[in-house]
Length: 73
Image (cartoon, rainbow, N blue to C red; front, side, top):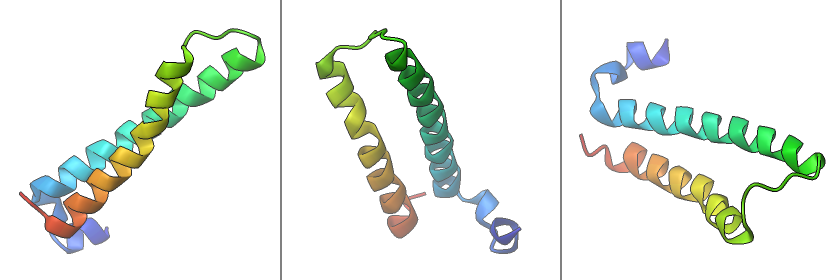
């Protein structure tokens, strides 16, 4: 309701932010399922891949903050 009141639905940066938030939600779901695999003793990803996956939420959060502060489009 607040986004509608402030007219944010017509802003491109707001759509990009929502897309990143939804992607983070999907990422969280994927990691929850991967956690269950690890509990069963399955390990589909290497240590290097897991270290790279660790950077995803930080990068996404930084992009979200930049989008909100700068509002580039």
